[in-house]
Amino acid sequence: MKNALVLICFLLIGGVAGAYGDQMRATDTSVAGRETDGKILHSKPWPPLPSYESLDDFGRGYFPQAPYEEARKQKEFDLLEITYSSDGLPVRGLLMKPKAPGTRKWPAIIFNRGGNGDLGRITDNGQPCGGMTNTSCLDVADLYFLAKAGFVIIASDYRYQGATVKRDEWGGVEVDDVLNLVPALKSLDYVDPERLYMLGLSRGGTETYLALKRGIPVKAAAVIGGVTDVKAWVDSRPEMNIVNGNAFIDGFAHIWPDYEHRAEEQYRARSAVYWADQINVPVLILHSRTDRMVPVTQALRMSEALQEKGKVYSLHIYERDGHPLPRNREDRNRLIVDWFNRSGQVNP
Image (cartoon, rainbow, N blue to C red; front, side, top):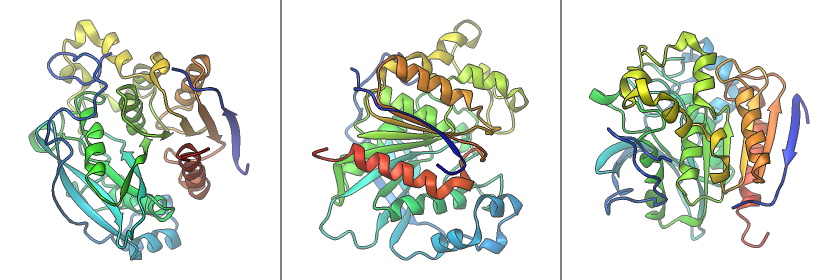
């Protein structure tokens, strides 16, 4: 395959903590915790995407003009900012749905964003969109091409907003926000509840694996540039200072309970390489050999763990690309759509 190294393994599918508050909770395989969880409280139209000319060098490097302008000018899908209930809290997110769904039932993708706090936010963070400080419009344009392939898209911005924005637990209580997108989707009469899928980018890969561990009812998952061993990733990126805090997060040492004595426990609870036996749906792993944000070893180790446990997975390593694989966008999306469609066949 062009510009890529491919390793694919198809095996017979086999087969502790979940969310965090002030203390660890026991594993919870349920999706909804409260009757109101997943209820869409209100929605409003998404603001128009900025013109290509207004993007900075980062934005124009991420997207060629033609596909970005196609996404910006598209008329087939409604793009909404939603607020839904999760653990009794209002959580912002995104919903991309067909303007004319007809009588068919649409499959849906739960997208888990990357970043932390305001960094990587999918809804508006108050900064001009199209640069490093606000990639929302780039994410929306990317997601449009998955919607165009025949999917409803829903995403959470996680609960950390306002006063709590720098208290992001990074694999803690916000996993509930991902789980509670399931009842949100099931409340939409044009969505097929039997064909739900999940896609995670970067930190969203961690959220994806944690949601799978807790039994989210999706047919398959895909992870792009995902973090699978949080401690190894932190050690590889000391310049981020994510342990002691930076401009976007107060730091794991100040957020996770009893970090001094329980750091190893909490890192492992967030790191899928240590509990691959609990991943029970097919997983497509996509990564760049030259990823400078999340080393490719994170993907290699996860595939090894899934291989050892006899799980269904596919590993695709692109030879040269950025963190979200923008140079191989079309091929990346083709692999994701094919993976989901094959995994969701009623009679394969």
